Image 1 (spheres, rainbow, N blue to C red):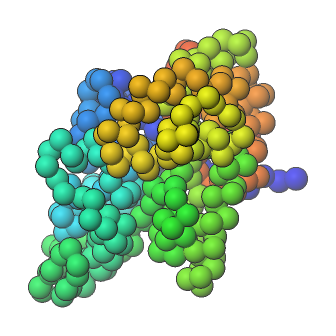
Image 2 (image 1 turned 180 degrees about the vertical axis):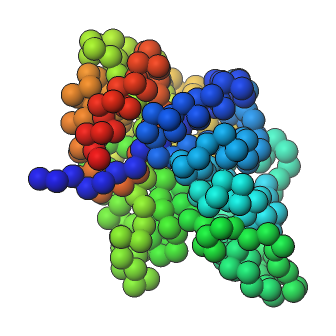
Image 3 (image 1 turned 30 degrees about the horizontal axis):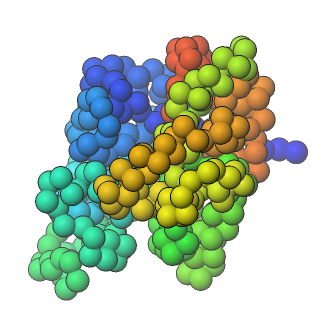
Length: 350
């Protein structure tokens, strides 16, 4: 049976990597056949170097020629939608029409320490920002009387190459998944096993049907950690080291069928709970959740093992409906893993 075409993206390793090396990684991944270069848009992101995402994308746009460039994800709180629309249009011009914009409802780590208000109806704010940016990119002079922003005779003096830059929503809850299907051009999922990805994609489809849209209009994407080695156990050791980042919350772990011995008030914590509240995140860490994640689960939530194992797992994601895979290359030999994707895995899915 012919497999559905899938795009492969490089999820740049922030915050682990210095800026000059990030640029080299971006160029190398494009040369090796990756279709997208995606960067997280954070102010704070654990220990390490956290560069400003759109400045990095501008530099990458100059150094690359064909890969799509975008974020996973920006938010409508740190940027006025006119400012973000102008940034995106400028980089779209620099790159020759290759920008995609990932947007989410916001994360406490990027906002609370800096006194940026964001918890009042963040999803409504996301929708309003999307509406404003699309109208500005069309070349329209915009008058807008919204809940969050007021525009009077507003327009941009630089427009994107494509008048509709694709907007991908980073969403996980049923309400926002349906919203993704209703208005977004793509979806960025957190790491999930194929069966949970398919389950959530069906909710996206519900929103699309409600809006009279086809799923052919929506790119279904997921970011995944990938460890590959000739010896399967060596790859699994890398997964063990990253399992707390791979499995994002107790709620999703339990939903996937893995039980963990945690207090009831911790078991129900979702990924959005962690994003929204520092105290919840701290409570989760104190519960030793990371230590309790079974290795089996972390493998289930990632692409890991031998080359054949990884081709089989990617096929499961494609069968579940994925059309874009963002790969976080965690080695154990990152250069060899990149070579494997370039010479064996990506060609297999072409």
